[in-house]
Image (tube, rainbow, N blue to C red; front, side):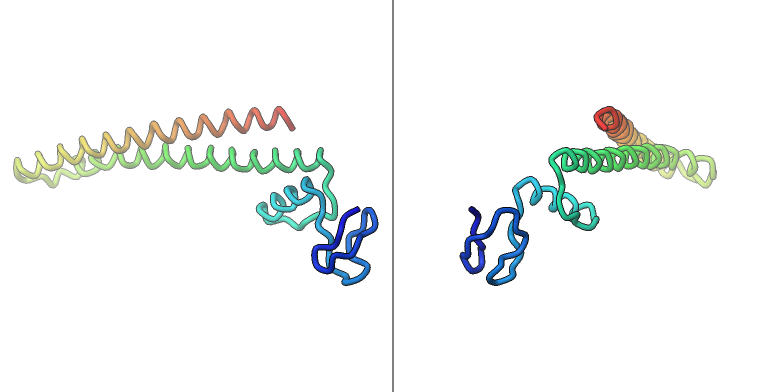
Length: 141
């Protein structure tokens, strides 16, 4: 038999509240874990969650996370391309008057291409990872 954590009174089986002090009784560990997941997702706590529903909720939260990774990957690709194209825009403006300015712009172009390329690789990898993870989770649902 479970006991009340506040007053120590013995509780009847399946009680949600203590008959002596009225405090809410702690639920089973699966329900506690489910409550934490539900609160983390910004949803209202259901009265009871079965283990099957608990697993389904976990999968839905993982799906949301994978979808977010995919979106960040696409954003990384876009930012990488933008960084790589920046020196081209400066060269197209044709405001270079001295050889020092041209040399500086060439170094800037190399740096932008390296940084943009790394960002592009990161974006492709992260987007691919998110897509594959999302596909696996959808198969389980």
